[in-house]
Amino acid sequence: MPWDKLANADIAYTFGDVILLPGKTEIEPSEVDVSTRIGPMSFHIPLISSPMDTVTETEMAIAMARLGGLGIVHRNCSVEEQVAMVKAVKRAESFIIRDVVTVSPEDTVERAKTIMKEMRISGLPVVEDGRLKGILTRRDIYFAENGRYKVKEVMTKDVITVTEDITPEEARKIMAKHKIEKLPVIDSEGRLIGLITAKDVFARESFPFASRDKEGRLRVGAAISPFDLERAKALEPYVDVLVTDVAHFHNENVIRAAKRVQDEVSVPLIVGNLGTYEAAEEVLTRLDPIGLRVGIASGSICTTGEVTGVAAPTLYAVAKVSDAVLNYGADVAVIADGGIRGPAEAAKAFAVGADAVMLGYALAGTKESPGSPIIVGGKMYKMYRGMGSPSARAKRFALDRYSKPAKGIPEGIEGLVPYRGDVATVVNEFVAGLKAAFGYVGAANIKGMKEKARLAIVTSIGKKEIAPHDVKPMETRP
Image (cartoon, rainbow, N blue to C red; front, top):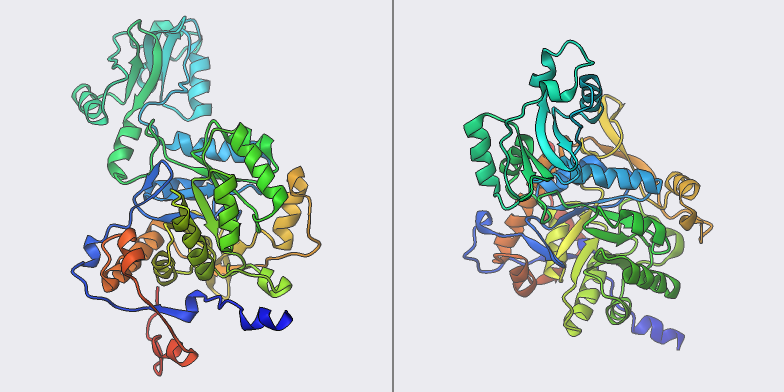
């Protein structure tokens, strides 16, 4: 009956409706462990950058992985551009480089110089019939004024090499002992199978908690339309995870398309967005994802709720979806997506079942987000737009034949956010706030937060009271 729909309506609590209650604690914030796991991947911090074209491209994905999180490269571009971005993340750091650029002993020094300049590399292994014959460095060619010299005439022939089972620590000691920057990796027959560089070895020491794959490369994810199998297959060799970029995943056509992607592509899949128990239940019984992206219409630049009246606020959606995951005993990560402005919202999301949070607004405006700063009224800003905004839709429809408009109305806006500096500072402050929240609750980790956290409803007057009030602030809050 119509009245029953009102009488039995759920209360869709949002982050602003609730507070975390303090609990007895033996945990100091510095002792809190906020690491998490999504499928086979472990992360030092539970933060994922959103696949938005004003948030995550190569630079953001590299920064997030180095900090111990994950970046999801947006799909608002051609397949070739997206593949190039994720390949750049994988090339940024690698303990053993597998795709090695080489030259032949018979090549000219001039050609070697050109390759070095174009590829921005300082040395080239010299290979003939797959076997290592020497190495050519900038030092070798510095005095070779005649570019017509053959590589074999100036290369270093006495090359120090290692085998594939070497550790980063051993590689570092060898490089330090012999004062060299490159270590060719060979097999038992002298064939070149990889290259270790000092730059990559030192990078591992600079970012000890970075998210890395088994090859030592930075982890990276990419967004896809579930209908774009061609894009998924093109990304497959380079990404650690694919993420469906759909506003409402609980759609029969979408689920069938995602099933096809899962059947034909070997990369793990995160699906979403989901907003209800029923949606999660259907995904868990029909697909095999490693993560669920949860929340509908809570983003700061999303207008879906306003335009359509349909929404599943992230806090409410995470609680519902987490119930489904628990009831089905599924080993699937719940990723809260939307409305998470800072650590307070993230802590509440973990309290109701999240395993990680996806950030858009919180990372937009950093140095690593795409685009250049804009000065307005003497202050610096960066562009931030929803993927359902008119400008983002126009670009996507022009580039991606799998994104033809199914809806005749935009569901997002674009605007400016304050320039925030480098992402490392923003993330470190975010994690510090998160650990402080865990400390108040008495939770040592995310599992403990799910078990121990208690929530209370707060009134509109209460919201004002727990924020700074009745004074003129002398400083800007982070």
